[in-house]
Amino acid sequence: MNHSSADATTAPASEQDARTPTADETRTATLGMGCFWGPDARFGAIEGVVRTRVGYAGGTSPTPSYHSLGDHTEVVQVEYDPDTLGYDDLLEVYWTNHDWGSTAPKRQYRSVVLAADDDQLAAAERSRDVLEERTGRSVATDLERLEAFTRAEDYHQKYELRSTPVVGDELATRYGDAFVDSTVVARLNGFVAGHGEPSQRAALFERVELEPTQRSELQRRF
Image 1 (tube, rainbow, N blue to C red):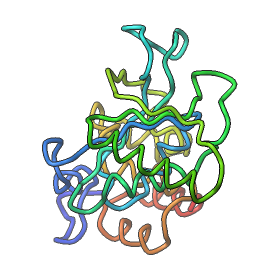
Image 2: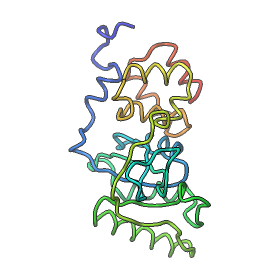
Image 3: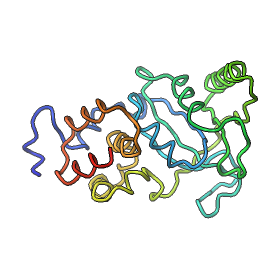
Image 4: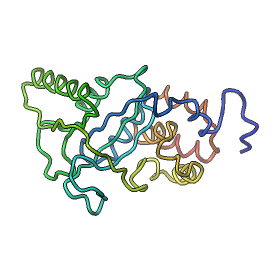
């Protein structure tokens, strides 16, 4: 497809990403809720989320990796536009979508909120207390300050989309190093995992220029 022929409302994915908030205009939440593939997709489908990435945090090893994790935990980092989405909104999604009431069998998959600052830590404590009062159950989730985050290996990033034939490989090649931080890629990763509303998917399809084979494969997964 000839990208130069795109009209004013349709543009290559990379151009769509250029219109999203930059890193200095966003805030970041770091959350552990089991295997990080699922949360990466779930949060990526939410309007107001700008970028997602998965990695390792909450431990003491300076150089964790998937096969040498030490005492770290799998986490997702969610970069969001505070003018559109609040930290409390993300916490609501967090509590609703994993088992916060029991201790994980491995520290790798524990439930943990890693706060970037005192405000996030206080918000997490408030939301935990409200949850316990509402449900009458104790929350086993750890609430801690984030000390460091190590990005996971590329094959873990946007796993659902990478597992989609044609689309994942093509977009990874097109984007290169920008693949992980793309808003469009985050949305598509969420959509192929079954998250998001039909109207969201339709709107993205209208804005972003994709090859016919990519559109067909994405629509098959949606």
